[in-house]
Image (tube, rainbow, N blue to C red; front, side, top):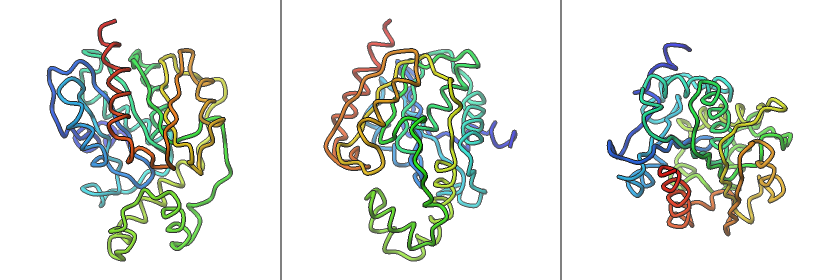
Amino acid sequence: MTSIAADAEAWIRRYEKSPDSAVRLVCLPYAGGSASYFFPVAKALAPLIEVLAIQYPGRQDRHREPCIDDIGKLADAIVGALEDLGGLNDKPLALFGHSMGATLSYEVTLRLEERGVKPVRLFVSGRRAPSRVREESVHVRDDAGVLRELRLLNGTSGEVLDNEELLRMALPAIRSDYRAIESYRCEPGRRISCPITALTGDADPRATLDEVRDWANHTTGEMDLTVLSGGHFFLNDHVPHVLKIISERLLPATRS
C-alpha cells in the first residue's frame, strides 16, 4: 500500500495544467466514477483554479489494479499521492467530492490538517453528513440489484448500462466502492477546521436536507448550503451554477 500511495502519477490527473493558478482544487469522484468526470470542470476553471482529479484504482487506465474497498485506506493513499506530488503548501488547496467522494474528501481533509496542510474549503456534494448513517447493502446485491440502484440514481450513462461488456468491466469497481462507503463509519468527535460548502439536490433519494445540514457538525469553521433542483446527480443539470459557486468561494480566499 505504501508504494501505491506514493504514486502521484497513478492517482492524480491534471487535464489542464495551470502553473499560475491562484488555488488547486482536488476533485474526488462518486462510487463507480472516475477522474474523467471532472475533465469539463478542469477546462472551465483553468487557469485561475487548477483541478487535480483523483483516479481510484480498478477503473479506466487503472482497471488492472485491485480496487480498494475501505474509505480510510483510500484516504491514506490519496494523501500519500498528494504528498508525493509536492508543493502542498505553495498555494491554497481545496477539495470537492460528490457522493462517496464527499465522504472521502472529508477524510482526506482530516489527514491533511493533521499534517499541517490547511485546505481553504471543502465542497461536499450529494452526500449526507458522515455522522448520518443509513444501513445500506447495495454491495451485497446481485448484479441486477446493483443495476437497479444505478438506474435509480441516474448517474451512469445508458451506454454502460445497456452494454454487457462495459458493465462486466465496470461492476467490480462499482461494487467495491459501494462496499467502501456502506461500511464506513466516522470517528465521533473529530472535526476539520476549514469551512464547508454543501450542495444537494432537492429530490436526492440518498440525502435529505436535514442529513446534509449536519455537515455543520463536522467542522469548527463555517458551513453554507446550496439546494438545487434534481436528484442524486443534480450536478449534471447545474454545471454553470456549481462552477460559479466554486469560483466565488475559492478566489476570494486566495486574497485573504
